[in-house]
Picture 1 (tube, rainbow, N blue to C red):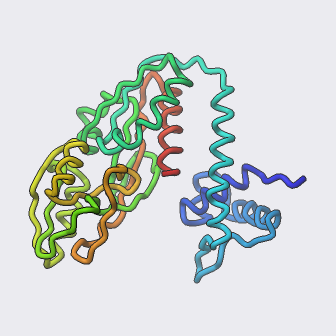
Picture 2: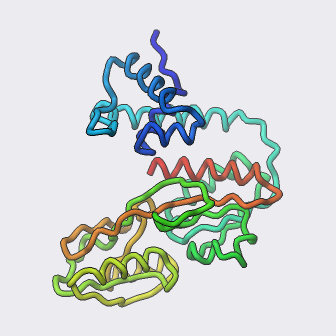
Length: 283
């Protein structure tokens, strides 16, 4: 009976997510030829090419896209089995700093499973703007920080995902044609800065109608028809929709990074980091 190599599948998923063999090799600590060999072995087992060469780049093709979802499921199942049977003595308090939109959409799917596996770990969560979480005077208050970073900014954090920044609103309410009404977080928010920057380059009129640092407050304002906002696509709640319109400029990308602080509980931080990365990459 044929058996796929989980190691080759993990490399394949990383190549697709990172957009290249060399980038995947950097993360895995392997040379580009070694990564290429793993992909070649996987293709030989399946009898299908998974990438097409376009110019100088190798782009995942339809067969590769079809494999991707199954590969992620297999890897998640593998990782879940190891977590289930892991003999853990982790205990203590973990202080997590996280933007409110991720606390709302990401944490509910993590907290129960994490607490069941590590019942002796007390999780203390603080929601705030990324800028405030990473402030030099505050960041030592946390063991682990999930934060947003502009795509061109150098960072010491571990890149989890380079996500699309998208317009978000209530799909049941039509957008005004003459002016864009905005529902935004306060000054210092990465989303707010990008939105204003891009709208200033357009000719369409705009104004801010409502400001709130909490995602629930923004959702309520949007549902009342006060306007639209911007979020990382992986943090869009089910109650809102991604909005596309000619009057709304493309907002580009945003980096989602994890910052593991130098604390007395590095093992706990590492475990929670695994949970967060797995959920974000599979949203």
